[in-house]
View 1 (cartoon, rainbow, N blue to C red):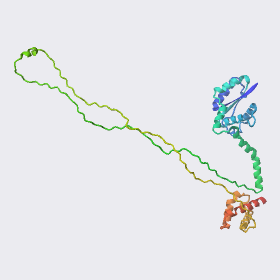
View 2 (cartoon, rainbow, N blue to C red; view 1 turned 120 degrees about the vertical axis):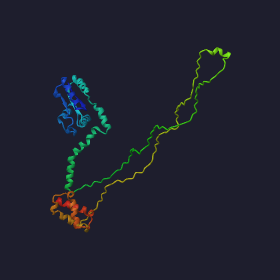
View 3 (cartoon, rainbow, N blue to C red; view 1 turned 30 degrees about the vertical axis):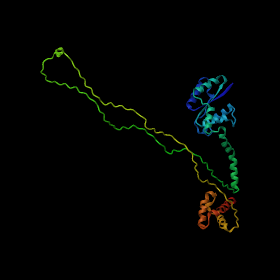
View 4 (cartoon, rainbow, N blue to C red; view 1 turned 90 degrees about the vertical axis):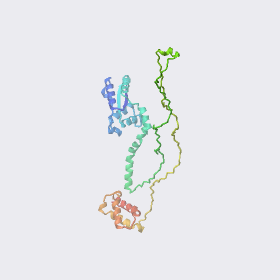
Length: 332
């Protein structure tokens, strides 16, 4: 029996080398497939249909299978997928070949994507739902346009107040070494040896006979004191740097906007709107506005109305003119 082994690679070169090793071990080249890594079609999830459909059939993926979308996500992020159909006996060697070339642990990678905000299979549901509903939405919109309906969205802003850390400056403490001259007076003792010759003329005394003709040496040494400088280092001050954290309450004031829609009932018999209705009726025969929607023609219509009725307020008659204008286009 055979089985399909799928590997995901960050590097296309690694994927190609893994495929070559698998082929070298005897797996038929037609049973080794690589996704078209980096193609825009795969990034959109619609390309390389043959590869993905064969993978779906081989692994038994249905449309809601999460593993399938994990592989799709890997390809979307630029990774290369290698699919190998091999006999059961050759499967360990195929897996070993992929591992030698840095195959990705897809489960671990999916957990990493999840920590970054990827919701797995759920990421693809809005797009599928939108595609399934796009036809109905288009039909409904066309029906509404045929019936002269127009939707005005009511938009309301919500304010979210958070906080972030900003730099407010700080303190830089720099230590440096300086020198200053010092001086002090000290008394030093110094010895000097003096040799003096004195002339003498006296008879030799008896006590001098023993030393009269004996050789002698007398030494007298001189000593002196010199200044010796020694230094002792003492800590005389400490500079301590620390931080104190506190909290304060700040009132944040801002404004949010909301679209308010006022519905006003217009009575066509009301004399206030009669000029507006008459003006709108004339627009149906004006060639400048033939085939133009209200959104496309509104600026020109407003300009023409202001020239004819300079004292009238456009916001008061706009709805009346639009209603009659759209009705004229529907009847035409």
